[in-house]
Image (cartoon, rainbow, N blue to C red):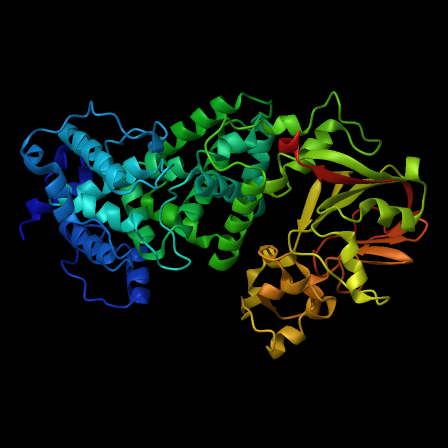
Length: 567
């Protein structure tokens, strides 16, 4: 087939180096593992025709719904109109949320062709309600299609993918919004310096992260985006998260290099525009290969855990009744400095702590559950006020003026599952922190060192490995959860851990509460009078002492998370 067949829509004058084909002219590969390696290495990156043929092969191999519209369906629908010049004045469907078709080195008429294809897709996929990335993906695939009908078929197959556990494009507002929350969670854990920059400069962090997909599918220059597409068509949605986190890391480097010390709060729209401008001009500082290299050097938790986090966030949105597009609530509403009052931390410090918590709780309002200044120094009263609340935030001020604490993912009532025996419970979302003398957070060691979790454990109750897990003797098993509730994200039982000591999150009995175990000490140990405590390095969080190792408590507070949407 002539090479021109795959360049009908391309404005070759804009293609630069990509206009010249070189390198291999065929791919002899059937195994997905081989494709994965070749895609990452850019095996077909310098040959337009070969890339088009590989894309065709990859898209044809996507498992799809039985009735998936193909090129013939498109030709039947368009009929005689196919011979007419398409019009870009045809508006795009509402579900693209106002996102235009990027030019991506296409001819002007090709943008109009993309409009016609997307409108035809809308007619064939009535269940799509929110798909802002579709214009960018359609424009990219047009590059490598011989006609509109073939591009329509390729887009349809991507939308109709029904492989279990694999998704390629968000098609509902619920899926899209939960992906934004999931990206926020991943940025918080794997891109801490950049996340801190966004928290320090943007008034609404969630609003900034809502653009994460557009950074990749829309803002990236064509040469970078097409390398991402190489890998995305082989490996799926996870690649988009990786690339967006890499872009956030490069943005942070760009900002700290040019304007170190600038840390005033700006309108979120200005930060969004600044990130967009940086990504659109990224070609001057970061090559496509460097972007991919950075993306795949990020040691993310495995795909199953990311899927579980996405489902957890979706469920959280459903419970709040957020299933269709609506005006985003500003995270600042959760922490109103005029109404927030703590004797341990300021509103600014609480805002900083709030930036660390999982996205699904970010819009909740802090609710004071227990404070020693009102409820006294009694462990039994601590339990009675905190039980039934999940998650909670523990804040401690020592008599030396140090402030430290912990985000605790599980209900303190779970301690009763161990009977009188002190046993650990909780999940890897727990973390400990200190605010004074300086602000620092210490997360589950497995997040920073995924090699400690060698593989996902099979969900088999008779699995002997599960019996050795630290979560096994804490009875954190599914029957204790209401029917239909998800397993907790980052639950220790999902991992093959080399040591019990790496998942000792929280524990309590009648004479003490403990946060973080393993090794020679605990991150926090507090006595029954809530008066004395000690802190040291523990294996679970790999933290230094959070304050003076043996300390006296001046004040202890526990905060819950009240759903702001319910008010």
